[in-house]
Amino acid sequence: MNRSFLILISFLLIGFSSCREDVDASALQVYDGPVNTSINVSLIQSDSAIVRSAIQAPKQLEYENGNLEFPEGINIEFFDVDGNLTTTMRADRGYYLRDENLYKGVGDVQVENRVKDQSLKAEEIFWDPNKKKIYTEKFVTVRDGQTLFNGTGLEADDSFSNYVLKDIRDSRTLLPGEEK
Image (cartoon, rainbow, N blue to C red; front, top):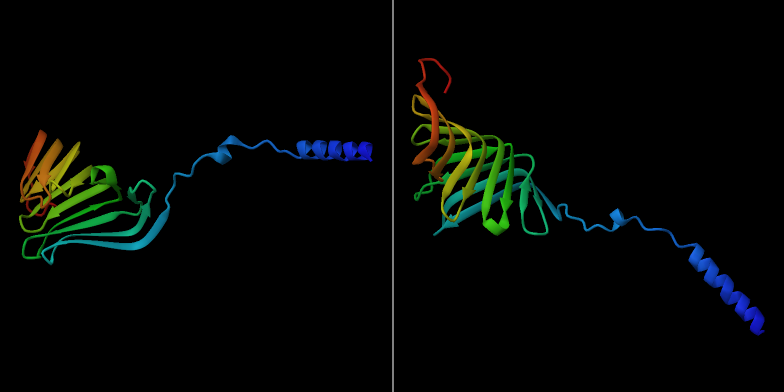
């Protein structure tokens, strides 16, 4: 009986060790993709029951670290103290960086101040809701009334009422009938 028991144990050990598969190390990597997906997102920020900003996006991806991605574009609207829409911002793709409390728009970025007849076009822009500032270090085109300014780098309040172009390359006046 001892001998048959030892033979049985030997077969079991051989069987268990021969069935072991090598595990692909890449299969054990931690997943860092989105943990949540939302469709047709609308975020409203208000102060004293007055809407200050509204964010809309067709799709939002949320990551474990709290960052958000808006892969199908983002639209942000800014309102004055009376709740009137003053400024709009849109981008082909957007990001929210939680640790910095910062929004980033990339692609075809457009900002329009509807009150002052001003607009901005850029490849990338950042919005800091705490400081109420928008800024970029990339190339920008600003239209202020009938004048176009091209430059690199810009800082403005989030209503785009007051802005500073950092490195102006050129400017010109729009001709009658020329598209704004």
